[in-house]
Length: 137
Image (cartoon, rainbow, N blue to C red):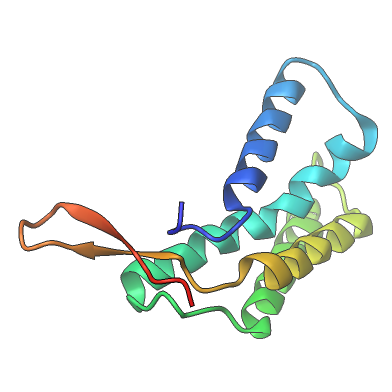
């Protein structure tokens, strides 16, 4: 789909597959510990970027700055690696999770933070939406 950034569907599919495997009792050590952390930022910021391009700014060329990713990385790290472990005993601090979040942020910035290949716009018959392909340049 041209509305979502490249690799967004792959990241989401891998995340869902991993959740099904874990629900079925399959735990691959490092995958179980860090895959969700690596995929968190690409999935969330990819969806957010598509929403901003399509509905907020209505500009398919809009992309996030490095500061958007950095602030999200810091917020995610603070919440899951400092706040939750200090409040709940079943959450644990793991500095490697922050490294995994950072890897996801780098992947998002380099591969997914691009202009949309399609734009959603409202037709005259509200509330229907229609997808329009943008010319490749």
